[in-house]
Image 1 (cartoon, one colour):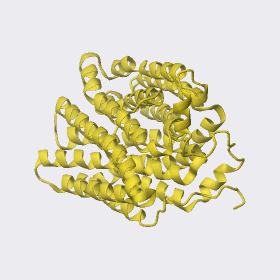
Image 2: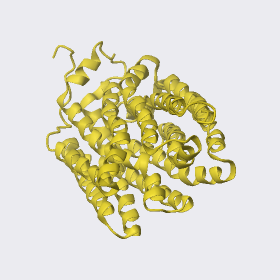
Image 3: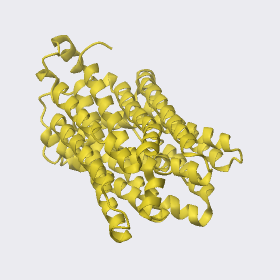
Image 4: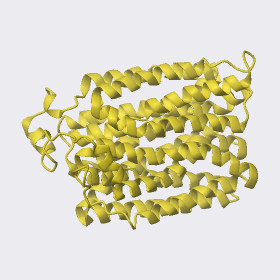
Length: 427
């Protein structure tokens, strides 16, 4: 683990950390914000879904934007946008200033834009920067560690935002953390280049190692490459499985803190600690998943290695989610749910590495498709979860995630990650 590429990875982890502080913060302030602004649970669900809709819609365009402008400029620009839009969220007036429909509409618009500004992040950092700065034999670990960065950012968000809310209120809690986006933008702009060969700190030996098992760096992306990606069976199947896994992810992302405080009646402080524990287990899962992915691929090949890891993790995630939903013991419920989330993060590295293995030099576009499929459930789940909870209870709402996890596991029986996609739009 020597070489400047690990500094680049450190910048990606930092940016992931910041990204999740500035997108998870609204989930933590949601109860205070809902009461202060006079919103209902359903209206809060609309706000959650607006973020997920923007995030999902801008995944594929985000990959294209990254191809057009390069990872360095793209990430710096969207990180600045995170700061601006977080400030805008804190300044949305309440129902005492204008009608509640306007308040909800304004929040939905701002959250949609925050989702859109986050959309390009992972296709560009993983499908762009990591793909360019690391040899294919090391893609798993950087993927896992970048996911660990985001989960640690989310873990820090709960206790940090709760403490800031108690001291200053939910609006100032958002304003205080907003400048972190500028830090991420500055770090990416000053420390990362689009092409490793352009960085003054790279050595010839490291550059040769990075290029050792990939297509030539000078190979151009063909016009119409997006058509190749959208026609490829394996990429579409992986994206569908990612959809299923992320239904579970968004169940936690949007509703876990609310579930603990309003359904299980934990205090905000205790709920913040348990939410942090959930994300810390996610960081452990993502890191272990990165190591395991590289190891299993070396031992079993990319098809069987990614299949075994993803199927095992999704089955365990669904099982623990079911236990958490049906247990009458409050602490067992919390522990089981935290482990369920941790197992979802074991799937991140194999999902992304399998997509990159199929797509090759079209990875930035292909991972945009992957993350589009993975984040549609944020919009769906933001509405489905309160809908199911209102009619069938919160147990049923949580169990719905188990069904998606099991379905996502079964899809991997059809996925062949060792089949490269066609190299011609007419193929």
